[in-house]
Image 1: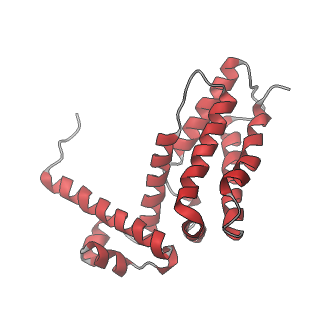
Image 2 (image 1 turned 180 degrees about the vertical axis):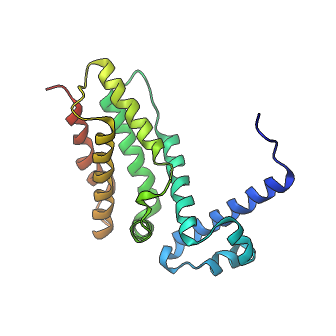
Length: 198
């Protein structure tokens, strides 16, 4: 049985959310590199000690933001049993690209740089939510007879992730006019064909 949260627990959760929300707002406005812990604390009206009771560093904020982004993204991935596995995959890719695109070029550039600088590849950022959806899509394609197991689900997800990060990085290095959604679909849509039967 889950322990009932006390008013103190609820207040702590609210403070942590307030700090994370403000950090996200400031990072969107100024970029990750330019935002300091002092700015976050001042904007939230909390002491640095309060910040450090929830986060050990600015990197912890980035981890929390990335985990939140991945949870929000997973809510956009709709698994409709009546659709083909290829359509489900393409819908997921498009939802992902639209989600990133809404934050804009400048924020994404700052955010991708921060993820690289802070070496987030080994952190728990709820990436399994994306993987779980793609695994379901592949299993549906196998069950429906549209796919064959040309690679493991883990290998396919590694390929998907590497292609996605490559597209995001390429977009960040390009002029803002470059269209992320078109660019992403051109690169990400075809990789599902690797699972199709010949």
